Image (cartoon, rainbow, N blue to C red; front, side, top):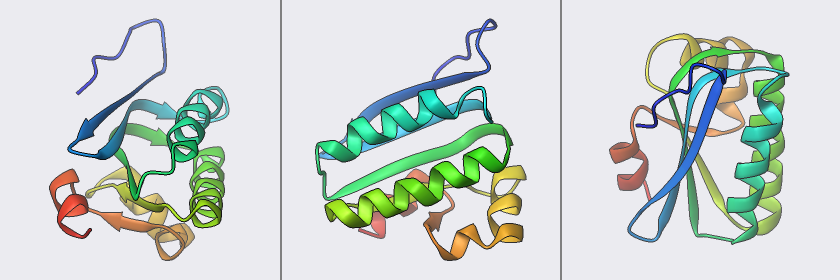
Length: 119
């Protein structure tokens, strides 16, 4: 996983597991960081992979702008014919997704391995 730069509230990195891009986010997802995350997600979606995995297991805070980012990413993925899978195990992110109903809008898996198996 990416090391968080102490000067930055978030780190975003995309690697590949076979042909599948896995974008990992570490840190906080809020109005100060959603542009950085959203940009990387849009870049990856633009390549039109069959599946894009968005790994949020390293996220320690998610504000409403993060939820909006996920909903918009799902809309864009659907438009492009890409399957978006969000990885969020127990903890703050999963709880926020469930409480707001966003887990019914985006596909959520507990870990990257499960996301890849679900393909």
